[in-house]
Image 1 (cartoon, one colour):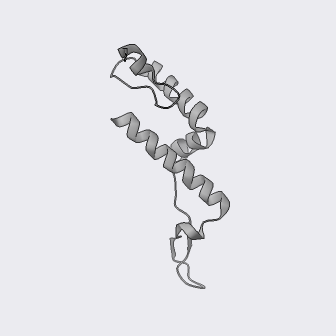
Image 2: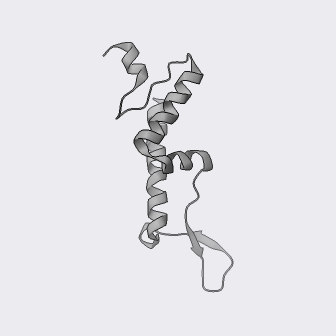
Length: 94
């Protein structure tokens, strides 16, 4: 594949950062994430992700992480966005 097109990326792979022209790469990466993966993934990148929790025991103030089967519908969607964010990070760092 042509080196220029490799750096630009495509619909299935983010643009490759080759160590030069960071401002251009950053704009391309944001456009890729928002356009291909969705605004919710960009939110996960900007805000970070906190796993859903529940009380450790009835009446307890201690909190523990929920099992995936205990997630509410919205929590599942946010978790999926986080997984997409993680996948995107893997591609960026290769």
